[in-house]
Structure formats: structure tokens, C-alpha cells
Length: 240
Image 1 (cartoon, rainbow, N blue to C red):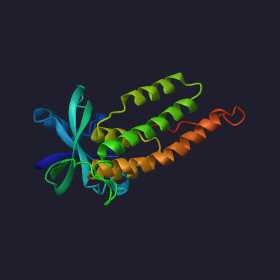
Image 2: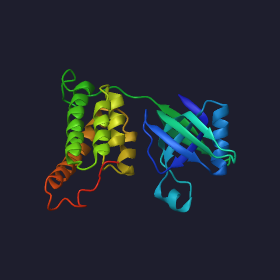
Image 3: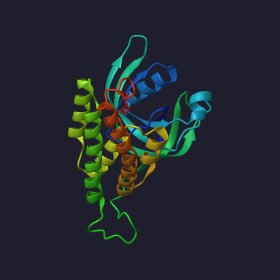
Image 4: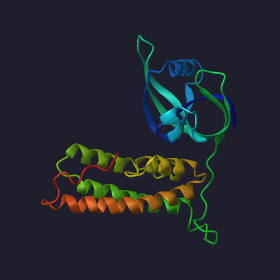
């Protein structure tokens, strides 16, 4: 699907499909953008701004982003908005338009490709999206439950982590985006890389690679939490 004139909002965030995104809209050009979105289909594109854009305003950003659909709004008398959005389809920017106060672009809406074997010679009947998803769920639960064990003197944090464990989806595509956005130590570049992976099996395999690192960090935090002599302020909080 091709879409012309999609409003773009470059942000220092990677939005994944199905993820919530609260925003406070205060800059005049984006107030105009949100007003137009509310009059039309309530959607705009969120795209990760590059360091050049965030530091110098040069207009550079990545080419793969996610449609944000506005689900709640709170307008203020002075024209500002608080909005809550939900991530929908991914898109690829094909060309930019510069005739508006805010960014717009012609984009291609990206479809999700089906599960594929992990290796070219793998048996698709045994190594598929479902099997990879099952293994990812196991590894994600291990990381989260280890972080719960490492969370001492913070019942609210432990309860939050417990709710995340309960919310892990089983469907492979939904799982891939859920896991991508909650990886505790993933940075913006990591998240953008995961967003750009075109098929769910490859995305889940990459997430499993991240989870190996996450498990090492979680184990270290658990060890620290069990040693009262070194715990102090050392354990900190890794989960975002």
C-alpha cells in the first residue's frame, strides 16, 4: 500500500506496532499537524530522528517508521495537546515533501512476511515461527523472572515486572514487537534495527541474541541483590 502526504513526527524514540505512545504536543507546527490528523484519519508517522537532527535540526532521520494512531486527546486552551497513540503498521519513506511547516512524506506501508526457517537447510516443519516464538517466550520469561528475583525492597517494581511476564503474547508477530520494546538494555539503534527486520522469524532470532546479553546482566543483578555487603546502591535499575 502506498500513501502520499503522511505527516511525519521525528522523535528520539522507536515506536513498535501495538505499543502505546503518550506525547505532549507544544510546538506550533506539530499542533497544526495534530489538528489536521484529528480532522482526518487520526494517524501520522513516527520515525526515529538521527543524532544530527536531534542536535542540529538538520532534518535527517531513518527511513523505516511506524504509523501512530491517536486514541485519546486532551486539548489545552493555549493550543497544546496531550495525546495517546497506538503503534500500527510499519512504513518505509519513499520521498519527502517540504511544502508544509511539518514533515510529510510518501510512504509504502510494509506488510509482515511469514515465518521462515532459521537456516537455509532447516526443516520448515520443525524450525518455524511458532517454534522460534516458543523458545523466545521461554528465554524472555527467564530474564524477567530473574529481574524480579533481583528486585529487592521495591515491591512496586517487582509487581510491574510480574505484570509484564503475564502480558507476554503467544502470537509470533505480536511477541516479536512486544519483546523488542521491553528489552531492558537495548538502545535506540538496537530497537531501530529490530523494527527494520522484515520477517518475524529473523526478528525473533535477533531478539534471542539480545536476550543472551540480558540474561547475563539479570544474573549479575541477582547475584548483587543476594549479597548484602555489596548491594548498597550498586544494583541499580536496568529495566526501562
